[in-house]
Length: 274
Image (cartoon, rainbow, N blue to C red):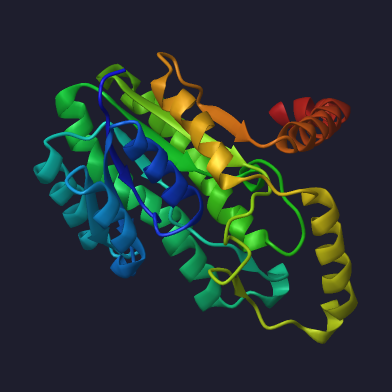
């Protein structure tokens, strides 16, 4: 397999770090970003020249363009662009402040958009490339307490599906990675929580219990790396791919319910046609 050059955001921990290590271990080159560069010091020491650490807050559009340009100048090309930077926000829809909503979208949606826009001219010029958008099972389904997170991922899904059609003629592939529950820091120290309203106090506890039951045994981020390598090495990679055992069952139940409702109400839809 020819050597690939990666650009990975949010590489200080979780998926981003594990995928960077897997790529480096097989001889690929990686430009990895983090807000705190010290989190990448050990990788820089271990891998040397094939590894380029870059300080980046993806909410800064100008910095996104500069980081992508720096990676391209350093390595001479980009083959795999991974928009992994993001975090989970917990709060009922009524509890979310304007600042919290904007911050979630700035990171999870706009950060991915800016990096994608920055990379596309380089990928178009070389006539190849693969953009991996790290979405979630929460990008196609939705659960209480994480509504604004779902909003960010549903938006990423829509823009990425459109993007895939727009750039296919340039030899560029797009894949939405949709993990289920994994043992990352998504719900840990990197997550944020809205101030709870008294009206939802009991509901918060119940929803958290339901979430723990739904997630079950979290997946291993290290194991996910082999799956991601399979995706980027495929001649015809999928537009969407789940990670973990739980998403398929959730998606089937959700879409079966949607189809049944749409069919039940089709007569109303047809009357609306005029």
